Image 1 (cartoon, rainbow, N blue to C red):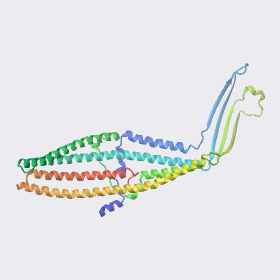
Image 2 (image 1 turned 30 degrees about the vertical axis):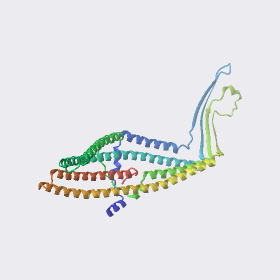
Image 3 (image 1 turned 60 degrees about the horizontal axis):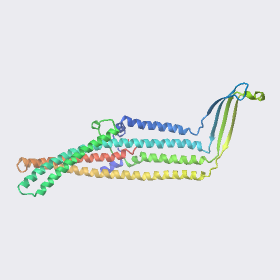
Image 4 (image 1 turned 45 degrees about the vertical axis):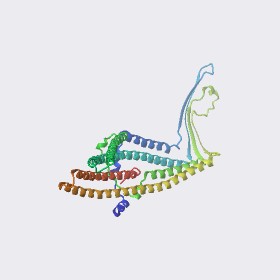
Length: 400
């Protein structure tokens, strides 16, 4: 127990854990890559959303209003109306865009990690099913020996028929369980095929090890996502407030056009065909819903901050629960190891007694089969331990 607690308190490497991403099919991996690229592009758009577009316009007009001839005019303009000060709104809009990008990226990583964990979980469960199949085969062998021994006792009048019936029923149930395991194996392979294009029978299972609670907290993806989301809501609240404060904008227009020939005789001689219009404006909206809008943004930020606190508590509970589960499995493994040693001694003893004529060959086979059953129990518990550790892996961003 002392060694186990020392192991828990230390940060232990998770061997080749981050290489597990290659287990996903090419299409699944590309979908996540496209999500990440889309998130980067959306961030680029959102970061520059405060910059208004430049409006380019060209007009050419014809009129047949006059009987003498058809008149035409053309006009080319470049216009812009750009806010340069929004009471902090521009700065916080950029910060909001970056926080949104981080939150979206965290969500993508969480989804990707969960899918990888699903695929690895199927691999572990496939291994577990194979072990349970082999274990059941030895159990069925013992069932058959038990039926032979009870039939001999029944024929000799030593046992009642109910004992033989129970032995027959147990064998039938174990054979049914073996058939069900075969079906479960097919289901798992089908599920794996939806996640990966690799052959599960040729993939080597990873060896997952425990990470410390401190590392689990510091690199937990869900906590990072919630912290980024809290920042996102904080900046959003400031952007909302700035919407109702004064805004300073510059506006400009360049015009290149021909004079209207219909009024050429009345056009002042000091006008230009090419000229600029420019100026500035100060605006401030008066909205009846402004206070409610600002207050709503504050409430959303407070909710996000509370979620961070709640997630920290959930992470602690998750880690403690998995740690306790692992401790129980380690105790089961320790008990199985004792049983294996006991059955090894019993098998040797029974084998020697059988050679001396004091036991039968069937007694020896029962002990051998029981020894193999306990060895498979140990391997099954080790797989269950790996499945528990996988719960930690899927929630951590990077494993050292």
